[in-house]
Length: 213
Image (tube, rainbow, N blue to C red; front, side, top):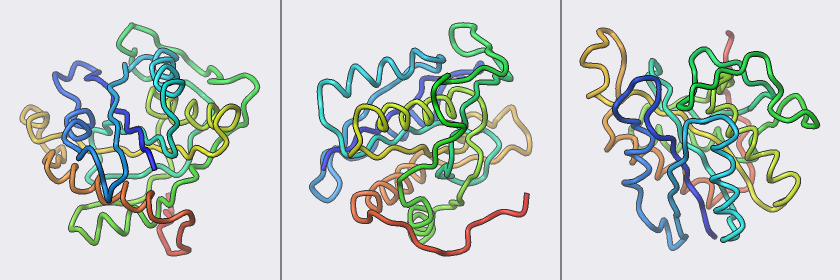
């Protein structure tokens, strides 16, 4: 199998993006399966264009996007992407869409086809803090998760897509008292475990990972 793992460039005034740092350090193969890595811009619409260029070159079984969620304590696979861009801050080209559909002809939401509960449990088993997230936000992270699912539905029906958020890196919270962080090494360990699960299982487990709010 072939896996494409994408990660955003730094945004929001940050000098680094831990998602990109972690993805760049992922192994080139996991259990014999090829892991390709791709940096994408934190820019609405342009981000999916960069991925599309890659998809026409190689047939991928899985495309997994990774992004930064500063303030979260854990690595969080995302369950769902919603069809709206509602940017609290501008993207890296100054765009700040408010209440806009990502795709006019798309459904209200896409649920990931990846076994996100298994991914969480595999990361936890490796000693990596992880939990399931039910909101990818409404910025470029949610945008690319939705766009990937839309692309798969229309052009690559055998391709599975998903998204994982990672916390700040330690270097990012020096001037952010009280904000949680995670080492890049821990992120790499967690992402590797999560990808291994995606390569092993087609279905998820019916275990409790819900939230009350």
